[in-house]
Each structure stands twice: as C-alpha cells, then as structure tokens.
Image (cartoon, rainbow, N blue to C red; front, side, top):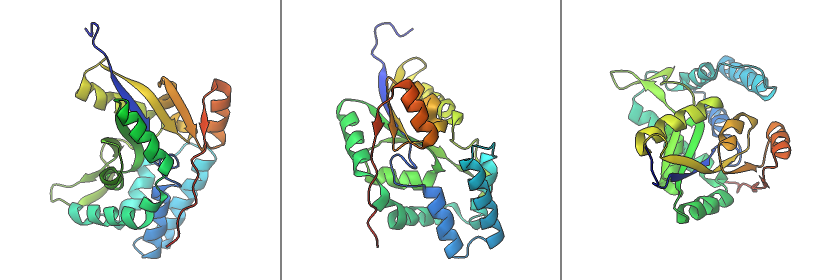
Length: 233
C-alpha cells in the first residue's frame, strides 16, 4: 500500500541518437574494424544486420552483440572495460549533446532520478555517467566467465525496445518498491522506444527517426531538435 506517499519521479533518457549524436555501437564497430580486432567477414555480418535493422526486419539482438564481442572474447574484464572507457573518452564524449546535459540537470534540480536506459554496452554508459549528470543506468551487460574473462554471450537480454520497460520496471521495483515510482519524463529518438515514451507523463521525441516522427505526430508528443556539429579531432 502506498497511501499518500509521493512517488519517486524518473527522468529516463535513451543514449544512442538521443543523449549522444549517432550510435556508440556503430562507432565501436568502425574502430574495431580499423584496429583489425574483428575480421572483415564479421564486420560484413554486423553491417548486414544493421541494414536489416534499419528496414525494421526482425533481428537477433543478442547475436549481433556477440559478433561485436568477438574482439574481446577470452580477455580480462578489467582490460576490456578500460578499453571501452578509453573508446568513450576518445570517440563518444565529444558527441554528447549539450542539450541532453542541460535537460538532465534541469530534471535533477526538479527532484527527478535521472537514468539512462540503453542498448549500448555497459562500460561505455558507465564512463558517460562519470562525466554527465545522470546518476543511474541500465544497459547491455556481457557475461563474464568464472575466470574473469569476457564471453560473447549477453548477460540476460539486450536492453533494447520492449526490454527497456521490462528492465526499468525490474530495477525500479527493486530500488524504490513496486508502485512507488513513475516516469515523469522520457526522451528518445527511436520508434522502438514507443512503450517507454508512452509510459511517461511528459514524453519527448528527440531528433526522431522516421518511425518515431510518425508516432510523435500521431500522439502529439513534442519533438526536440538536439542535433549538433561534432567537433573534429
């Protein structure tokens, strides 16, 4: 029973294409290919998956993440996490949108719990959390074997599409108690996040893709233009 207890207010942000310009997994694949950490054949498979994804065809989310993690299979977790943190510093940090920073600060000042829910790999999102004003994150985690080495398997399910709401509910029920929280604000660019925005009191479509733009128009959701010119290095 909640009685008259005020519910915890959440401000939930998608990461790729919303909080940052572009897609961190795509940039990671490009980097791994450039460094020859994944083979041309593996790269071609990932690119084929990406094309099918853009056409909204059913895809195995765990499979493609396993393909990316071929580069890290059998390597120590600490070593890989450090690599991904460095990758974030060198290639993603400059893509973090100032408008996302400002929105996160504003929501935090209102008393919201600011959380990023992302399909991206956890070490990348954790690094972003060290540098920006969100205090919680739920992202895709890869399995670590008993010997401390990464595998190519996803730990649980990728935090993608409908799984975002499932994972968010599980996390929030455990932290705040079932029925003791609600989504005040939600921000996303992608049509697969419709359930997340639908659950929010104040949904925002950020630089929406074609599918999300159509949904936002039908539902009357505000559309935010957070596109930036990424500084070159």
